[in-house]
Image (tube, rainbow, N blue to C red; front, top):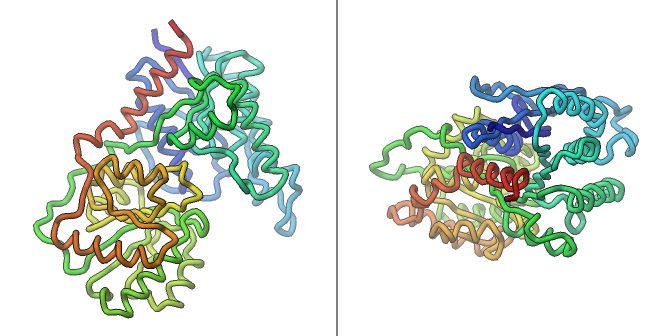
Amino acid sequence: MVKSVLMIAFHTPPMQGSSGVLRTMNFARHLPRHGWNALILSANTRAYVETGIDSDANAPLIERSFALDAARHLAVGGRYPTMLALPDRWASWWLSAVPAALRLVRRHRPQLVWSTYPIATAHLIGMSVHRITGIPWVADMRDPMTDAGYPAQRWPRKAFQWIEAHAAARCARLVCTTPGAVNMYRTRYPHVARERFCLIENGYDEAAFGSAPSRGTVRTRIRLVHSGLIYPSERDPSALLAALSLLKNGGAIDGASFHLVLRACGHDHYLRAHIDALGLRGLIELAPPLPYHQAIAEMQDADGLLLLQASNCNAQIPAKLYEYLRAGRPILALTDRFGDTAVKLRAFGIDTIAALDSTPDIVQAILRFLEMIRSHSAPVANPHAVRSESRRARSAQLATLFNHIVDPS
């Protein structure tokens, strides 16, 4: 018997700038092979800050309901009442999404409701549908909703804490993407049965990867690529830029031998000011976003891939890490050696790791990494081991989880 799940997800195509799009759409695409059809409820596209042109003829159908972005649609003079943006700027989505979800429930009779963060309103919708219908609810937290000092503002933080606590108390399963996040929730809610906090990691989409280019020799100009957002806090590149300045001024690298591409970093103005101040424009390129398949091809063609993750995100793993592993290129990770990101890399035999906030550490790591690339000795993930990290494999895990909820026997 084919079962169905109602998936409530703000991040769906054509939205850009979030790995959550890929997580939801790949789950929905692969679940049917495991006996589960997915019904997706999302927000109308005007609520998205940024949209792209990527399309997929095989993408599941998406039902959309009305939503506004308080910061863009309800602001006067750039300001809007806090109450219009609790728990987040898309709180208006709840008003239309709950009735829309109930119509889908009446029409399709799903066995489960699934909602996914980081838009907290999605969990508010999932919780509401669960309470009205009694259908079991799975809360896909991905990363922890709250942490020390996050969210920074008082009332959003209180709203997030309320949703988080009620999700832990009411949902059939609370799903995280890293072991650190699972352990954090088990510690935070010790009265909740440990088995209700589950791990389903992010992954890569095999269909996005073509044949990797053949490589006889390393380019004279080594090309290092960072693909995706660089946050001034969680992925602060200041120590990296300082290290590159030292290496350039010392003659270890120059524009003819080294090229760093920061693709779709999302903070070009902030980074350009630092790059210009340190005289690094000849070494670093701030590149615009690419369609997804082209971004994957760029990863496969790079001499090395750069990963940034601060120690305050030790319980998180950037979603791009799984694509980096599948790309089969050397990885230089600037992150805490004790965080989940470093643990994941070491599990694949990758030890080219340095602390993101230590300029001396990064200087030595870059020199070692470049020498390893030149000598073809940089570690890369074993292709056979990486297969278990695909989103198709993650969907099988999710289907198994769903089956245990609807039929515990």
